[in-house]
Length: 313
Image (cartoon, rainbow, N blue to C red; front, side, top):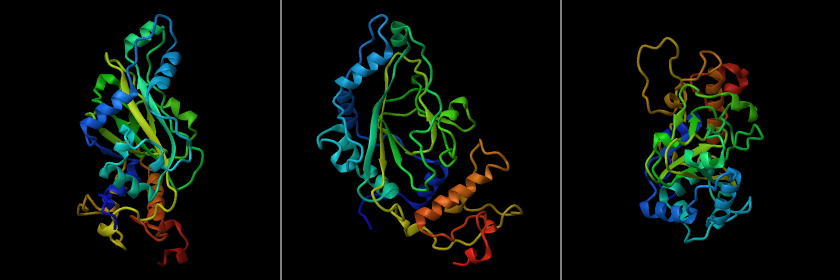
């Protein structure tokens, strides 16, 4: 077993079910300060200067490097840079090991900058929130990429932090069509202290909020994929090899809240009464993939759909 602080089975079950894990204020202040220095200052645009040009100049001037897609993550950043120091934190290494296994591969990164009203007023542009979307979802695979969102400074509610909708990551949808959905029940907004990290399944629905504060907001995202197996890469010492099926529907006692089954069978507020059950099936399929156990089931959802011979371990 790795000496890293690997994720627990309940944490993995939460990621499988909800599509994210959040760690508040875990990046040390000195790394946050270094990152902000490397990101650089952004001046208010000249009157009539297009926001696209302002953004382009900011990206060109900062000290965040270009990195080729397919680069081993361990080789993507200079060792003395803030991002490399961030990736070397035990919590980050343990989380990435648990989710992606050994030697993750860099896909892309981006410095997201959300400007305050003064910038838009100077540029003559509209200050609006980003549409709801998925990031580069192009296939229906069970394997998944991880997107780590890093918030290097405090994000207040008026700054329009990232909004995301837990539990949406396993819905197969048209990426563009998501733009019509706004203010979905259960959505969360990233209001957080400096040094907060958000690990996301690549399919989760999200978007940037509108910045109504007087300060520019920064968020740095890295997308990574597995280079090998994602099976049982976390700390599995707390997982039952064959959990018995629970009583369902007619239930007189409350189940333990922190078991894999309880976590995976907890609906999100936006779930419909009937079709929301499709998400339970999707969660079980992903857990089967991650545990390499094609017979695993929770609350009998997949077993009742399978032929008899598939039910025998």
